[in-house]
Structures are given as C-alpha cells and as structure tokens.
Image (cartoon, one colour):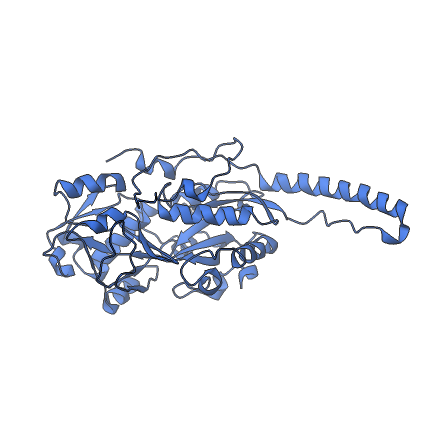
Length: 386
C-alpha cells in the first residue's frame, strides 16, 4: 500500500498565503484518467475573525472620511456609514473530504471558486482533509475562527458526527451537537463493481476478494455496512486494503475480483466514476441493491441512505458507456456549518450557489437539489438555510 495515500487526511493547513487554483487543475484529464494522485500541502488561512476586525476598522475609518468629504461638498447628501459589525466580506475554509485530483475534490474546489467570485466572500480555501479528520481538526481551532471553517459531510458522517456514533476506528473526538446542515451539494453513487463474469448476485461474492479503502474511511465504513448488514456476507469475503493507484495493477495480476472504490458522482452529463478505466474492463459490471438491502442497512446503522437508479448509458466512461442499468446506494455530499456560523454567511453561501452560472451540483442544479438528504431533521438545519 502506498503509505502516502492517507497523508492528506492529517496535513495541517500552513500559515503561508493561499494560492488561487483553477478547478481544471484538480479535475480528471480529458481522457478520463484519474491516476494522478500527488498530494498537495494546503495553506492555513489567516484568522477570519482577525480579518473581520481589520476590515471593519478600515471600512469604518474610510467611510467616516468619505462621509465628511461629501458633507463638506453638499451637507444634504452625506453618505451613510457602513455597519462595522458586519461579518461580510469574510474568508472561509471549506474542508473537502476527498483526496486531491479526483472528481469529488474537483467539485469541492469548484464550490470554493464560486464563493470566491461572490462579492460577499474574500479568500475561500478547500483543503483536502478526509472525514472524520476534518471535523476533529476544526474542533481544535479557537472559538473566533471555528465558525468560518466548514466541513463537507457525507450521508454517513453528518448525524454520526453530531451524536458521536461512528465506529471507534472512524471516530469523532467529541459529539458535535452544534453541527448544522446547510445544503446538499451533489449525489454520489456507491456499490460493488465486479470484474469476475461469474459474479451475478451478492451471494456470488462469497469467497471473493474485494478491494476497499483501508480504515479509517467513509467508503470503507459503507463497504462493511453493505456487505455485513445489507447482504450478510462480510465474514465470507476477503477485503483487500488498496488505494486507487494500486487498483489497476491488482486487477491486472488477478489479485482482486471486485471493488467498492469506484464511486460515481452525478454531474449534468451523467455519472462520472472515480476511475473511469475500470469500467472499460471487458467483464466489469455493478451488483445492484434492492429495497430490502437499503432497509437492512438503515436499520442496523446510525445513518440513513437511499437507492440511486442509474439508467443504461448514464455512466461516463473513457471509451464507452456500459449498457446495463444499475441500482446503487446514495453517498450524497452536503455542506455543513456550525450553530454560531453567522446567519449572514450561510445566507450568502446559498445565494451565491443558487445564482452560479453554469449551475452548480448534480443534473437538476443546486436550487432543486439542496434539500435532498435522507430523513433530514429540520432542527439540524442552520436557521439561515431553512
């Protein structure tokens, strides 16, 4: 296993000035290849609270000078002085739970760039830090900084982070009772991609070798939940700890029969796999889930998921679109904030995303999809997002 693969989860954000990045620097290449997984050191942002104070002071002082000058020219046209207590514009740090240079991180970088382009925000960073590490790291920040460091969460990691109910090996250091839902960003489908032509059902996976992320990982957690609670075969398969760069070699030498790694994000053009070339394997095919599988997973775990129907031809692959339809599990991603994140900040985030051109998010667009979340409790939604 490449020992560097997980290092992105624990890299601190440095104090160096942030560098602006283009989404295309992180997106898969035109050929569909996603095999460039070099890690990057992300800069630590300046304290948003300190920047607020400096901006407010300068804004107030400048307004007083302008107001005095205008009044001298025309006493009847004195300009109003801006409110120095306003939090806007502000800098943000949005934690992307995906490794760099894969499509999920590209979506999250695009989110940051959309917000950076809005007048309401200054610098918006999107460091790639996996869950649960991102939320644990935010909790170590000072109280004046923490409200402006926002995690992107998955369906597995929202309420379990709030209640501290994830497995010990995927653990949160504390219950995050003040974590709040802001908006669903895009859907991600999850399932088992088989390469053995003789695998047609979950029972056919018994005795097979399934490549999965090493612990801790939300994808690994979902893999175990599907195999154990959904299909009842976890103790009858062999999970092989692999990272994406290792998958092609393992497939080529016949050391794996299937994988849960090839999650797919929904885009306006269809579903984009994490590793499109894997779907070009001559016998690659998905093992669909049914309603009973979804019910059993939800009953046995502290999270809820849903099924995702993928129509034939809806998967974007490098050279072909597989013709078979499939039903997989939803691994939806959402932006979260904190109960003390200012209402003005949350409201402006939603406004910027709703007015983004082209539309941000899945095929239906952000405005339509932002409420899509399994069994969303309105009490857990940030007041400014309701």
